[in-house]
Amino acid sequence: MDGLALFGLVSVSAMLVFYALEDRSPRFILAFAAACVLASVYGFLQGAWPFGIVEAIWAGVAVQRWRQRTKAG
Image (cartoon, rainbow, N blue to C red; front, side, top):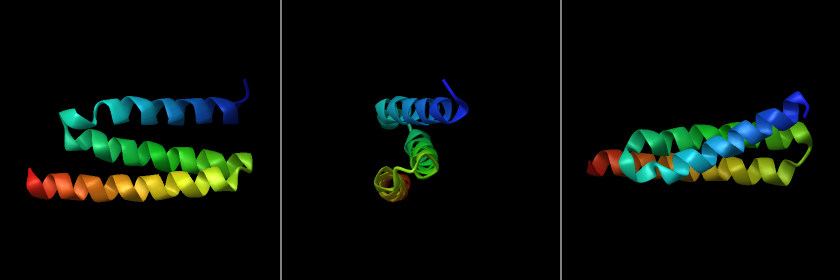
């Protein structure tokens, strides 16, 4: 496994873990957003730009959810 594939595996695995933990704390929502940014970077580096764009959008959605949750909490 090369470095880029390992980076992709780690970033997508982090997304999965942080998504599963989102109900515990708003920090996990923000961590999910950061993992989405990393997955987006991976997509662009790999040459899969549609994946990179979609992950960037997911990051924006997660930041919005984090903002709403911190206002309500």
